[in-house]
Amino acid sequence: MAQPAVVVEDKSTGFIRGLGLLDSTMIVAGSMIGSGIFIVSADIARHVGSAGGLILTWMITGLLTITAALSYGELAAMMPEAGGQYVYLREAFSPLWGFLYGWTLFLVIQTGTIAAVAVGFARYLGVLFPSISPTAWIVEPINLSPGYAVSLSVQQLVAVLMIAVLTWINTRGLRLGKWIQNVFTSAKTLSLAALIILGVFVGRNAQAVAANFAAAFSPRDAETILPDFAFMPAVSAASGLLGIVVAYCTAQVGSLFSADAWNNITFTAREVRDPRRNIPLSLALGTGLVMSLYVLASVAYLCVLPLSAIQHAPDDRVATAALQAIFGDVGAAMMAVAIVISTFGCNNGLILAGARVVYAMARDGLFFRRTGQLNRNHVPGTALVIQGFWTALLILPRTRLRDAAGAPLLDSTGAATYGNLYSNLLDYVIFAALVFYVLTIAGIFVLRRKRPDAERPYRAFGYPVVPVLYIAAATVIMLVLITYKTQTTWPGVVIMLTGVPFYVLWRRLAGPPDPS
Image (cartoon, rainbow, N blue to C red; front, side, top):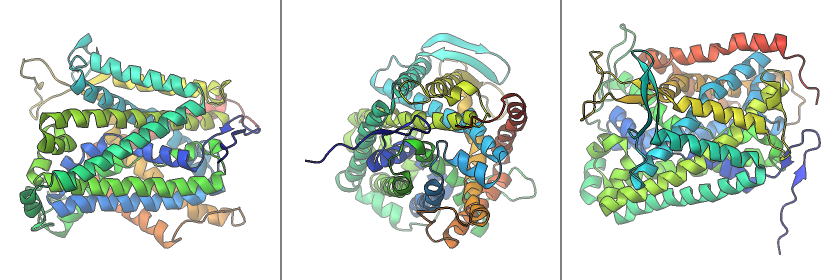
């Protein structure tokens, strides 16, 4: 009979090395699969305008993600430290670059994603329990300015409670957190696989398949993409090579966001058994599994729905539309259950991993010192609580929606409508996140020069060609976003740069790093 894995304490840090290869892979996959795959295909289809383009967009995302994961494997095996990517940037470039990454991650990237996933959880729970409504007010919107308000609805309260519960669970120790991660990641992976099987084999619509794939790459009703720079032309996927490049690059915003957070396992390196082997392996296995499922899910959608139905799915809920086409109204409930499971498991992984970056920053004297301590359960309890508190705060502010003329948008009852501030913030930081990915992979080249004799149990696949190809492709996407999505690009850079004065302040006031 197989013996249970031995759980040991890392005497140098106090962390428990309780994550094996399966657990690590579940963190990679579980942190990636949220609600994006069920929604963003609508926006992608509007950008690229073709069935083949939809599948190709997900394939490009898959190649970028897996390539980055294989490259990160070298850094993870070389420096298996708590904080992961924060440490890689610190060691390759400087403590400032590490801090700017950790700051942006804490301020928006990780916490904003957790907030978005939590509200997604509450929204789909509301399909099953209608009392969980975005307009069932506990505190009605209080307008703070022409553009912003603050409120607390039942939906927002459920999202906050979800964050509180998962934060508390993860303060109880690694064992409970990883158990939840494994159970929910298994469940949602099976749910996504079931969606694919139902779409391809049960709900297959011969007319939709014929229409979608008769001219698979011929754009239909492709969205016109307007530049933010006047000297650049408005384009679409149907307007030549420039239009195709711009359409596929801007489409990557949704697909890359849906595939993000795969790097979270690097944050927990001090809690992984045999990290020099298991982290690179889990990165490859987790990203390969999820991106295969994402590509197949897009195929399933196209087997059930004509492209126009994907482009114009109500509220962009493509997966719901697909299951409704197969099962009627029962399909909407089935999809709601699947997304509730998916978002709960996703947030558990994000909450578990994100606090380890805050912990690592504090150990370097670059965050509140208490967050650099472990609790009696061998986890960074204070970092988890601060992360949860800030995330909950991001759920409360609202944006006041307006039409093109600047007038307030009203619902069918004549009441004002509101968006979510974190949604805007996440749009802003997509560019910054790409900058950090490119810098981190460039760090492989820097560290090979700076530390040629360092132990490297795993070396980046295809070095130097594959990492260079990732850097080149991601740079092209960033250049297109700067040109055509300027209004959602420059604020991300500003958010990142707000960390500079805080870095200077902490360097002066926090004292020397903890020598342990």
